[in-house]
Structure formats: C-alpha cells, structure tokens
Image 1 (cartoon, rainbow over the protein chains, first blue to last red):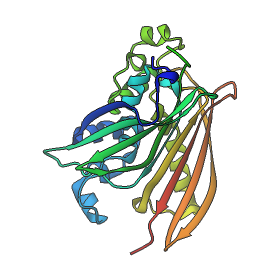
Image 2 (tube, rainbow over the protein chains, first blue to last red; image 1 turned 135 degrees about the vertical axis):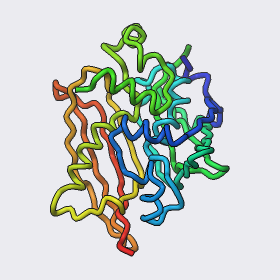
Image 3 (tube, rainbow over the protein chains, first blue to last red; image 1 turned 90 degrees about the horizontal axis):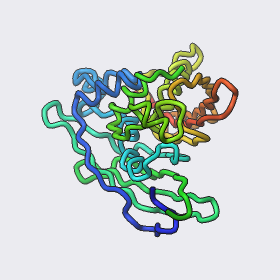
Length: 142
Length: 130
C-alpha cells in the first residue's frame, strides 16, 4: 500500500503497455453493453467517414486506470476519475493497437489524505486522452 | 442488481488483474461484502440511462453522430456485486458549438438504501449534419 508521505509531485507510480485487438473490442462491447458497430465493423466505420474500426473510448478509460489500481492494491481507493477523449485509437484487424500508460503524481493533498495521479496514455506516440486524472485516497504513512 | 459474473466479465474486458474483482474470498479478505467492480463499471449502469435519453422522441439525436467527449466518475464507494443500483440521469446543459451540440448528462447512481455510490458525468458531442 503506497503512503502519502512517500509521494512527491512528478513521481512515476506506474508504467504499463496493453494490446487492444478486435477481440478486446468485442469483449468490451459485451461487457459494457455498448454495441455501436463502429467498434467492430469496418464497413460501418467507413460509412460514417472513419478511417477504420475504433476502440471504445470507455475501453481506453477503463484499461488506463488499471496500472493505478494495481499500484493502490484496492479499487476502493479511487475517489474520482476523469478523462477527455482527444484522439481515437484505430484497431488494425491483424496487428491490433498497442497503448502505453504512464502514471505520475500530479498533486498531493496532505489534509485530505489524497493525491491526484495524472495519466499519459499514448497510441503510436500520440496522446489519446486529455486531462486524464485519478483522485486517490492514501494513508499518511505505510 | 449487480451480478458476480457481470463484474468478472467487465474486469476481464478492461484487463483488470486484481483478484478482488474475480475471487469472492479475496474481496472479503479486503473488507468488501462481495466482488468489487472496476472503477469504470458504473458505465454499465449509466449506459442504460444514456440509451433512454438518446431514444427519447423529442431528443432528436442521431446515434451514429454521437461522439463521447469526456467522462467523469466521482465515487462515494466502489460498486460491489449484489448492489441494487438506481441511476437517475439529468441533462445538465446543452450548448451549440460550430453547428455541433454539446450535451452534458449527469447520472446519479444510488444503492437500495438510497445512499450515493457514484456520479457519472458524460459530455456527448452530437456532430452536425454534413
């Protein structure tokens, strides 16, 4: 369990890579109930002017917080989580798409026993989420 | 009612690894009544309210033109298997921007006792006709 007093702004707390495949998208569609066909059908994606099948924004959001949950050891320590969807992730039918998540301490609030963790989520070197912030509750010391 | 298998299915889909999402004994050892849902699981509940909003006759929203702009979750506690949840969606604002509409929808998710669990806020961009 990470302790608040051991954290400083700018510290890296997690760093992970994930591969999205078409199977990941179908799996997420079923799990979430979001069956928008642009997430699994190339013809539908093309018909609305998209360059290809895109990952659900909420899949990216859901996966991007996982390294932080692993670091915390308890999802109940997540007090808040927000993102802006700034760039789509194209998921190639053969290659899939690899995304990278870097989590750093953005702010520490000793009085509230909380910290803001800022996520940088990239695909092909471009960030895909903006203002991706996780507010977490931490104990003062280990 | 949040089912255990739904929590497990969602956890796998978002590549969650913590046993607290899949193993009841691990969840109980961590002090929870049952399996703990990953943070973005609230979207499963919120999705149903958004679908109602988009399907409203007067809403006049073309689903294929809806883009998710942003999302925010504010938790009082995590969702746990066995929870009986109710979501109430409020359209907080509708703005026009360069022909597109920006809809901010807030879903308050509460448990059977009426206690607040999580507030899910979505901003949807409805793209203008070509």
